[in-house]
Length: 397
Image (cartoon, rainbow, N blue to C red; front, side, top):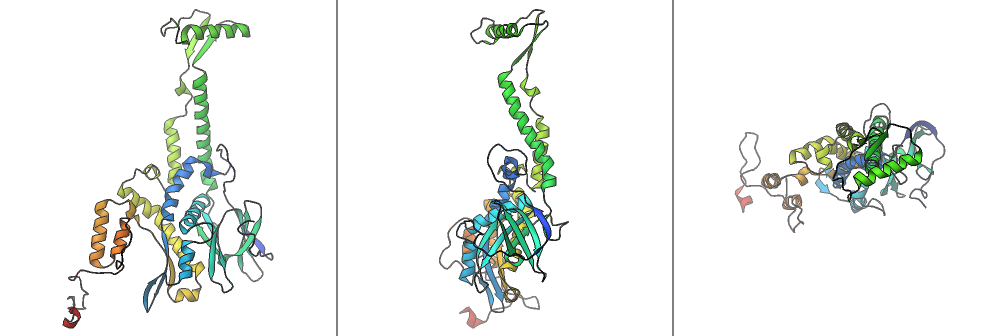
């Protein structure tokens, strides 16, 4: 039984919008037919972003007049850590971002208990999606799954991520029209290379006979040429001689290989489409390269994750009491040791980083008492006059 077979399906609805998804189902040699995830170029372009977003840690934040609390409710912390019995939060985030990059839309269903509290989150892999409304104007999404079954859920129970949000009122624009020409070029080029390699391994010399010969005579003359001049045990020591009856032309494999510059240009266009580059894909980036990539391609998706999880997991009333989901991610994981040291030292001195947060930057486990924020004594609060406020003598102990 599939994940969604046990959930209630809505029947009374009117179709208003349809969105076709680009999905991958099947194995074998890659050829452009909409299954772009089988392309090594596309997969390598998407993987760094999916991995980076997967490392973001989801936290339940409650900020109100009583102060700030992190993960105050155990059920929400468990939901972010283990959204369903089949995957962790990190795995779900990677899958959602992969869907988002392939389709410019990503969906996840929120299963709730009888009191309306979220208990599970399931990413949805669908071939198409219909936006439908009932007679009261309630919005639903009807998904056609890869197994052919259809499920319908209220839009309020769907986490919906999107990009290139332009022409459609609900869905991000499909990348199919933009990617199809590039994938055709890459596929044709790859096939051309395979054929060139096969030809270069089979045909090394072309013998052109200046007279008409019977087929058996052609084979006999060709075999004689091979035995005399291409056999490593031949006495010809690399030299070949022909008479007027035949011209011997050596086949250069380079003549059959597609232009390398054109190939690289096409691959770079695919990378640019996914807002990445060769350094990011090959993990040869510098600190500045990663910071630029993070701010351009990753940070906005993490913000979207935080906003969408917040508005779908909490009611307006709960959000009014300061509840919010925040996905924390740091681009310091790829920073130099000096940058990490400067960040931690300055953060601890100024009180915006505690000892455990500093240890986390270096991949170290937390320590007892390390969650307390401290600050240098010469960095006290500033009064309205601009002078540092002096602590009372009895507070100094």
